[in-house]
Length: 199
Image (cartoon, rainbow, N blue to C red; front, side, top):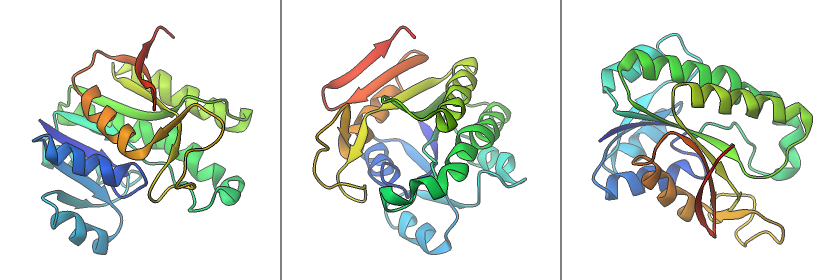
C-alpha cells in the first residue's frame, strides 16, 4: 500500500514510518525540514518537503498517489509545560490541518484516512478542535485513533505515566499500521490493546 504520512518526524511519526516500511508499505513522508527530508530518504522513505497549510499540499499528495493518508501533525512542544503556549497551533492542526489533508486525500483518490486523536479528557479549549477532527475524519469515512498518553523516546516521558490511559510510541506506531486494514470508525489505542469503540 502507498501511505502518505503527515507529521512523519514527530514522536509517533518516526516509529510509524519505520514500522510502515518494515511492513512492506511504500511511504511518503511530509516534513517542513530539508535536513529531515535527507534523513528520511536514507531510511527508504520518500520525503516530501512542505506544509499541511500550503496551497501546494493537494498537488504534492496527488503526485505521491497514496492509497492511505495518515494525519499525525500536532505542533506540540518538546516539553509538556509549554503546551498552553502551543494550544493555538495544536487546535489549528486538528481543524484546518485535518480539513486540508482530507481534501488532499479525496483529490488524490485515497481510500483510507487515519487521524490522531486522544483517549483522555481535554480542556474545553482543546476538546472542540478534537470533536471537529473526529467528525470530519468519520465523514470521509476514515479511522480515528484515540491514543493514550504517549511515553517513550522523544516524548515528554521516557517512562510510563502513572495515570492512564497510556501507550508507548512504538506500540502506538505498530497499532496504527494494523489500523490500515480496519473498518472505518473510532479505535482506542493503549498499552492494553486496540479496541473498536461504538462512539
